[in-house]
Image (cartoon, rainbow, N blue to C red; front, side):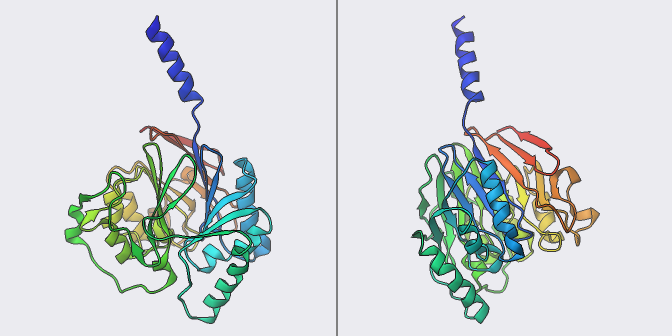
Length: 332
């Protein structure tokens, strides 16, 4: 009798357990990833594009409302490119932002890059500023958010459960050095209990290799957001196959990202159960797109449907397609 009472209490606790909610908001090939911790605090990674009559800001605010969020506690600007930081002023006009998190100064020298950065600075000045470096933590209650890359540098010590030798490094290749803002992206490993989510922004090939070679400093990730929208400038097999995601999400646009080479690397990753996409990739065609039920937006001129992940402390997660409400649960 005592066993059954204990079992019923445990089942009740599981049923009522709080979840980490992650919304991959469609910003047409940029990034806007909203995390809501079990404590109710929110962390938004990037704010999409400017213009388009406030389209991206409206989509982010709609996701926040769906999640019961009335403010953005931490807005992480991974880097100063238009599809990531451009939407910040419009977003801040629609919802309060408390902390702005970034890697520091912009080092791109073009007029457009400088104008973009200058439009961000006065908005950032309205809140609190957190300048992060590799190894920094973003203090979200209930989560462990570790910065693994920033300002062109990467961690040199492993995160929890990382540090094993990576045999894939013997076959690694290098690409031309990247001095753009992509290579300065803020990348993060987010942990909730045993669940781990890896988001590297638009970090590029050589720096990704540095994170996993000769040792895999990242360990494994249950959920992986494909780096750089699934472009072949990022996402080497050395990294993707080392972190062995169970589920991956590609924040591509209809004509941006989703490169066949990068798509194949993710699909062939050992242990991967499913890849989900924010958009059907027109260049990918039938051979390099997943099943339609796992694609949030099928048309180029779309409604901006999201993908949601609800993660639990034991590593279980449920992924839902906002377009058709198709859901799938992945056991730990």
